[in-house]
Every structure is written in C-alpha cells, then in structure tokens.
Length: 122
Image (cartoon, rainbow, N blue to C red):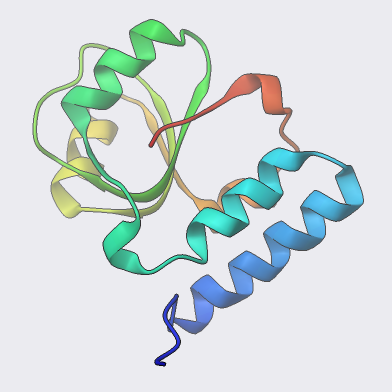
C-alpha cells in the first residue's frame, strides 16, 4: 500500500515542530493540528474568505487558523488575523487590503499563543 501524507519537506518539518510543541506545552491543540496536517492534501480544508468573514463574526477577536489553504473568493468586512498553511495570491491581496494579518503556520508556531485565542476552521 502506498504511503500517503505530506511529501513537502517544509510541511514534514512543521508537523514535527507542532508535535514537539504539543508535548512540551501540554496543549492538545498543537497535536491535533499536527495530525490534521499529516493527512493527504486532498483531505485538508480549502476555505474561502467569505467563510472566514462569517467565522470572524462568530469568534470575535480570535485568530482564525486554517490547516489548509485560504482562497480568495468573497470579500472581507474588517481586518482579520488569519493563520494558514498556504494562501492564494488573491487571498493575500484582499487580506492586506483590509489591513489584516496573514501568517503562515511556520511564522505562527514561532510566536507564543494561547489556545483560547485561536479558532481552528475546518
């Protein structure tokens, strides 16, 4: 049986970092995120900006974390703090146009974050 999962070296390294962070900090969120990223790309979520705008209203003041790709379909009403594995060019343009923050998971893992300030979007 063929092994599935991430083949990109950067994603594999990120998964290992998340696993170490989860074990050392005791926060299960990081282990859950590592498990989600370890699945094949076709299973990872692709989330459009309009959905993130709706989720931002549901979770005000939280960083929206997408364990997949953020796509540029739709528009934003306000500045959002979004963290994702990947961003499309259109999504980056729209997020920066509204003075929001678009962080990759590599950048986000390096900063201290509390689980109560993060909403994982599926």
